[in-house]
Length: 154
Length: 109
Image 1 (cartoon, rainbow over the protein chains, first blue to last red):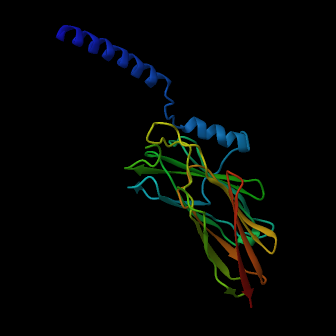
Image 2: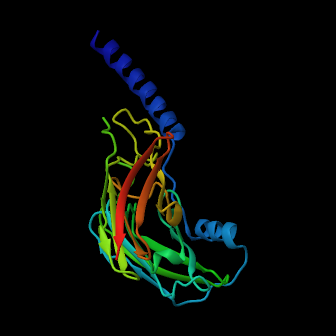
Image 3: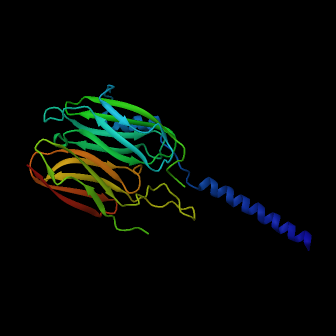
């Protein structure tokens, strides 16, 4: 009787292990973006155009204790006149489930190409910021943020 | 679970011509990223505010496109160069088609 019982439980255990294994295979796993995905997104927007450095001031913390709320301020140097202004700013991350964070459209009425928000970062990663001027010139900058507690999944 | 998103905006009511004013906005919203799993292991469907726009007297001033990487209760600040009196119209567009609006008068003198 005792022998039988162990036999059943072992069989059950094996069956359960099998199901668990299958479930692990089928369960969707969280995948993360990488630098190549960010490049692909930028290519989608601007093709093979060259980016200059400078003009953009990307203000993000070096270390973020809480990845759920990471402050970010983007400042682009520009006179913001009708003839010369910042048209768009795009921010990407190379270690989140999706590369896109935020895209801004500015107008000369803004007077200053600056915007702040708060973002979620899943892990330590790079923040990539690109800016498009009204004359078509493109600028880019990159900054790394060390995240101690991730802000995605859970 | 979710409360009705209420926008909060801080914008001056008066400004001098040519003055640069900062506008700060905050709206309560869970910003469900579509990446999170619930207790039973199922992925919670995405529901975020995807667009924020700011108009002044019907003219577009500033536009932000938000991705799931934007934190819950999204905050957004930006600038406006005062030139004439009028009214701001701020609009938040939700994934489910809902719109949340907030209007503010500005006197320029």
